[in-house]
Image (cartoon, rainbow over all chains, first blue to last red; front, side, top):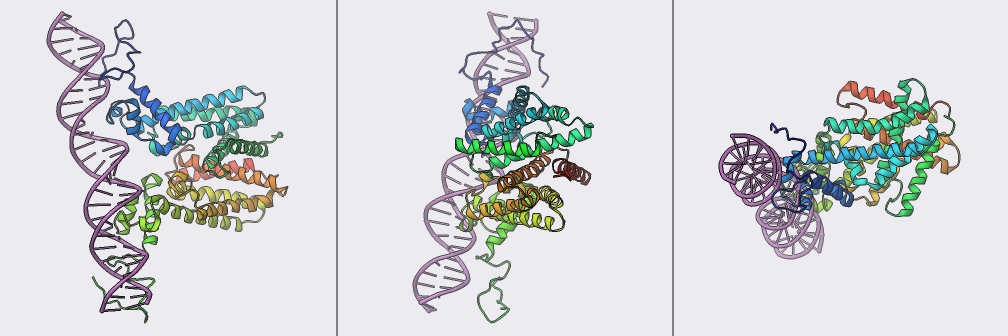
Amino acid sequence: MTKPIAPARAKPSRKVPKPEAGYHHGELQEALIAASEAILAEQGAEGFTLREAARRAGVSPAAPSHHFGNAQGLLTEVAIRGYEALADALRDAASRKQGAREKLHAQGLAYVEFALKHPGRFQMMFANKRLVADDPRLRQASRAAGHEFEIIIAELVGGPPKQAKTAAAAAWSTVHGFAKLALEDKFGSVQSEAGYREIMTTLNHVLNYLWPASR
Amino acid sequence: MTKPIAPARAKPSRKVPKPEAGYHHGELQEALIAASEAILAEQGAEGFTLREAARRAGVSPAAPSHHFGNAQGLLTEVAIRGYEALADALRDAASRKQGAREKLHAQGLAYVEFALKHPGRFQMMFANKRLVADDPRLRQASRAAGHEFEIIIAELVGGPPKQAKTAAAAAWSTVHGFAKLALEDKFGSVQSEAGYREIMTTLNHVLNYLWPASR
DNA sequence: CGGTCAATCTAAACAGTGTTAAGATAGATA
DNA sequence: TATCTATCTTAACACTGTTTAGATTGACCG
């Protein structure tokens, strides 16, 4: 490779060039990521194909390889952004509440809400075989999202860090399992708005059962 | 070939015929299911292909369609058997313990053990998009497995059926989420025997945290 | 200003996939 | 023995992800 170090400024290079120009795309990475996210939103994780992403970005099927290596590379980038969005959602949900238990409940609701509203992206985030599972940035993003749980849990249980680790695993497992089962229609259909709200009510009951006021 | 038939008994109809005969296979359904389970065991859910299953059964790629319609049909049959095996494991685990809490813990361990020891089959069981999700037998098998949890939970909580429903959803979510996260290496590698045992220990802690002696 | 060069993209090909249509074969039945 | 139907094969189709070789382009440097 040996990139020529690319001066940071003072050059006729346009970072936001003509949108639909000829040979060079200019923003192909972003376009491919956006196309992939659109496919995931429309068709779910099983509906993604690299060729379709290239098609939507207006390039040949071989173009993505120059930027992401292969399909796993592109999906890894999508998953990283997914984890960042999830961490944001968890942080935001907790920030809107007072008290550790309320924060934890809010995070649980936010987690499942994220999964149900972006099922394709969510499923892809947890499909290691379709990602570069040992990518450092992916691992870091995943751990960062999990960390949002641990922060609140540590506040809640107070005990030694080992118990906090256990409690965090418990909380993550519960909401993750609930989301996964809901996405596979094990709690009824998620399609209708009524079904969605019923499922979220069930989740509320589950959280109240496992983390009641006295803990 | 044309074996001299060598009938086991005085009747031309053989339900367990020559194992590797000519045009007609004779037990193709079972052979395809067995081949599919072998692929899932060796390669995981992502490694399954219909053509490979046909190859292992010694038939052409089009042969399965006459028995299962398409790949989803074959995988649905595999998933049904998976749910039956899971229900058996849950029932067996509970039967070996005394007391509702001990039974529930044993079921949780059995559930995750099942998932970690047969990851390909387990993942396929919960991959609706690769199955005929509304197949009545599949739905029934799935509900039967979930029912094994509800039996024990009802014994544990005792309260009104609505609370039992909530508690069952909680228990299933927790162990399912734990299994899924473990399979995606979120609790460390499952590869080594040491890693596997460490994860099961973590699960024990989680169960003791969420369902302690006093409940 | 003009030439070089690396980054970027295309075209074409390859091996693989699931599914379908048409035809061959064989087992059971009459 | 002849026929009928379930079963299986062959061949084709439209896809997929990836690789190789070559075309194009914009940026840098004299």
